[in-house]
Length: 331
Length: 248
Image 1 (tube, one colour):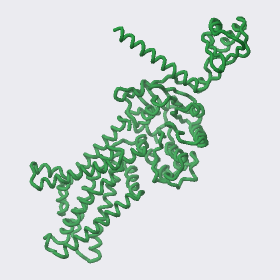
Image 2 (cartoon, each protein chain N blue to C red):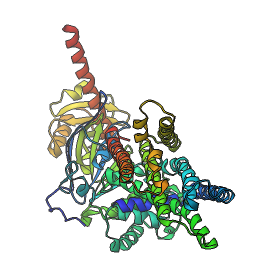
Image 3 (tube, helix red, strand yellow):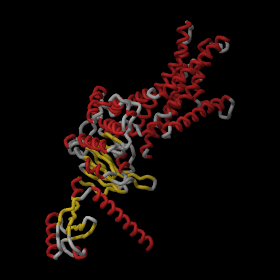
Image 4 (cartoon, one colour):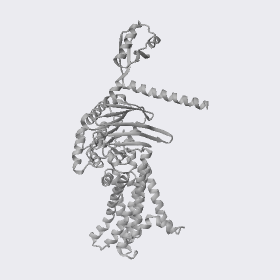
């Protein structure tokens, strides 16, 4: 097997990744790194560029520009060395229905250059990791969708890669199977396993349940790349103000930067961050004589944050286009 | 790595009923052709002027090559098209092996299958020799068998390339069969005295098979078949590499 990378070398490094099809940019300047123990969720609407990015990372699609390095090996200049550390499970598992599970895993092991003497042990470990022992002698074509997904996962794992890539891994599975697969991914890529995984999805709860980091893609651009915990805190305060309250009166308070009202009540964005900002908001509301029943930090959901990011990007794009249109008209 | 792909292809042909039906059908047709050739020889032993071996080469292995041309597209059509359609090609794309190795492995697997089919064809004269104690020129028959293998390999290489062009195995089979029949007809056109006859003969695989079917090993003909196979292997490898650009 190939040599282990230096501990400080990221398992995956993506720099300025571009993909252009005829007149259309599917991916524009994607940049990120992935280290051992991390599970990165690639989140985006349909057509955001998730599958394009994953296919390029796996060498199934040639980039128009940019660099990809897996365990320090450049995918363009040393593709075979780079791919030895890669396990890929596409949205449709690459299976041969006419093979048994055992035969398929042995074939995967040989394809990924597992030594002939080690292949039996590698297959046994992959079967155990994915709980496939009971079906190892059955034809893949006769297995249920959930089991086939597991076989695909075992095929991606059999050569013990450092980097795992999953494209919409739970598509078509029932809730029970989804839970099992998530647990399996978390187990395989757990903190001290030395492995990292990248997982694409358009399902927020999937990313929230499986990933440690989230990268939001929209129209081929990265909108945000942050630890999952950062998505939980939005910075907004949720206030309960009984009686008739004027939004303009609230907005006039120096400690409040922005005021919004929705079905859940008032949302206030403090001018200063943290507890000090929240305390200043509470003080000024009370001082202004506005009745304050409750005030607390807003518990954000990944979905709300994602929607906010995408809407913000759309608004920015619309403004840019309008400015361009005005300039064109003026010219 | 080429051998891993080749082994998978060779075994894969026997995992579906289609492979068994095609091989079984071909064996039956070989037997029928062999029976016709032996019967023809018994009725007129002087017809071919070179004994039973020459008669079998002309009247049995020559038509057998036509059968091989017709049946090879059935074996080659799924090589890549089937994998593209089912999505299993992603496994090869993400594995640490080059597309030249993928194309080479698939071709080698098909060549191993062709070798098996040629052995089936040669087993009938061997059976005749054992049962009836008939002396045969095994050197000449081996030359014919090698010619058949190279000819089958050429048909397989052409089929492999067409299998890379489509996701539908039937389209790949029709494309390779049409091309092989066209190349076959070039020889007929050259024999009929068409303009540029020598050039047409140079391009046509059946014309280069003729020397083998006379029991000869002509290095120029061997080189032709190897170049033919190498040309289509390179085209197939190039096409598979291009799939990365197209995102298929």
